[in-house]
Image (cartoon, rainbow, N blue to C red; front, side, top):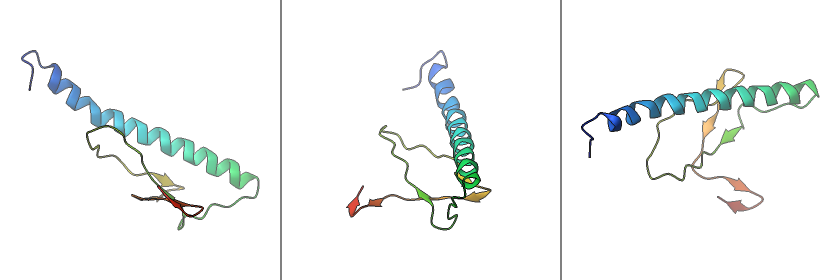
Length: 86
């Protein structure tokens, strides 16, 4: 239900901004980790790297892209680690 003072509409409008900010921060941290690893002679595979987002809220958020060195990283619904599927 919408409130007459407009609070509900304001809250809905700010969610995309917050999600966009979260994706910007994720991309910055990922890029920092990539640079750190590669400075120590580790190499990240840009074609094999994937991520899975765990969102425990009841609403689905449309987000931005996660990228690694300018290349978009694929988002997965499941993740397999040592034989276990998440």
